[in-house]
Image 1: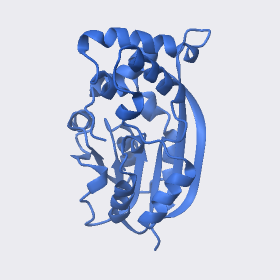
Image 2: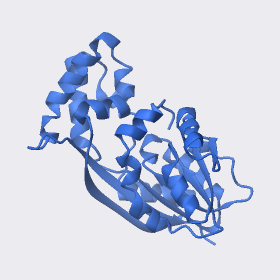
Image 3: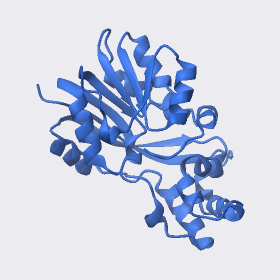
Length: 252
């Protein structure tokens, strides 16, 4: 995940990214004294929950802005800028690696899985959730319509996202050496404060960067119209999230 982030806005308007992960932490089940690596830790809120369980936790993210915000929130936790495809954190190895809402930003899936595998001790576990096949399909279609309306490059040439099926990601894990314990793909419609425009302004900066700044409002208006079906009768916009949740282990 190499994009730049507006960390304060992420915390203020898109907190659902980490607040909806409570049961993912239950799946991780951190234990006192365990060494746990939080990959793509963002602003550090889930990392802190892992630490409160008594684990010795390290949070890494490729965004320096996110890491700065995490350090400001939780100065006693070890946060570092690092790329999941080239982790250099194997001495000592970790008992578990955790990742929430990150790996769909990493198209080099094999490199990421191999890097996580190397960071784990034999018998260590990898618990992750991210966008899976069909994730934000309606939002993507709306963005594609907006790009076409302003004469920008097509969606497929700009999209930064990787949304694999269970079978595709299980194959990635298998190639890295993991044993897949559990995998589930499920729908999670999620309310978005500020609607389609807010979502694209936070997560669709790749598309905005391909459009002259003076046409951003025009593009976003087209996206809002194309994504009108995401807005329910009460006026709330629901992003059509589909999540892939996995639990894998490095063989002992």
